Image 1 (cartoon, rainbow, N blue to C red):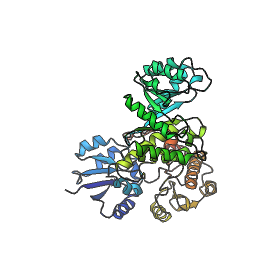
Image 2 (image 1 turned 90 degrees about the horizontal axis):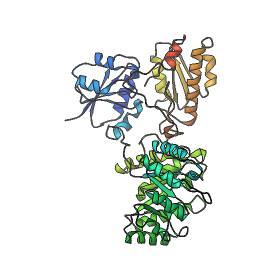
Image 3 (image 1 turned 120 degrees about the vertical axis):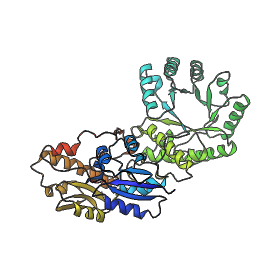
Length: 472
């Protein structure tokens, strides 16, 4: 039986929705568009849907706008048909249905993140615990206690025990054999930077060693260490060491590829900090490329360092990248259209509507409420009888006639400045919504089953302004 999907919308969005759906050709389902009688589609409520949607619903499922606030489980129970949220923008519907129509599953990953506290020896136990909790909260699986050269770490064992008491997996990274031995004795699950001469530290323990070459770049010695571990029944992780750009970067990548060729089943670790920390580039893109390499080579462990201010979100970026790469590989797909977590500065499709489409919509508006959108040609502001376009927000102010309404002027000023930032960077702009900076910024999750408190628009209107959310 052919699936039939009913799309709920409002007056202003209906023509655009029908146009987008028609442009999809044969999407693999039949569709119908139901106007529930509201002007702005995103403002339809659960009560409006329950009251105005005809029964019985002639569909196998119902899609509501992405920003619609309603308890979809309750609606599904009332109508006997599954209700789901679609994308926030109409123009994203083809991509939404391109992944099977159920959204993208980013819940799965197979790369373990070791997050290093590089100055652990200089921190007290409480500070180590606080740092570890924060790193775990944003995606770290193992907390690596970094030991500094010529810096005593007398509380190393206490730190390992304190982390273990909170069920936090621990690794210890040190060039000092006594510190490594102390970490293993305290119950650390991993010891980093062992080689063929120090592998014996892992004997008769439950610790997993991370083995490195005895001399930098010496893959042969790493292979010998791996063979020794195998003979001893030790499950080791191998790390050929990733080098910085201009200091052996490409050669080190070759070592990873060669190691995988020689040992197809080996567990491998890549320390990404030599690229993210030592390259003055936004770390999200660097991380995406490195974890793409990890995905291709089945490298299932990464050691992440978060020291430089420009890498302060690198754990979040690694977490997002491992999920994206897993999903793309599972789909036998390029890592495109798997969410925007790593599209922090630019969006793939920043302007959902063309200047002509916005102009056509502006002609339909019959009230004085300002709508703001962006297109290739700049920032569009429109209401009844007015449609302005500019590339800088400040030039629009004299034409908006809000000088005597401080609340309205302030609101429009902040929204237009946000729109200008989005336009200049090539980011998606949605009126009354924060810009989406991906995983570079924490973003609170709205409860879409409830109407939220009055935002800038309604508060401004209460002070004498008259404007509302943009159409979606």
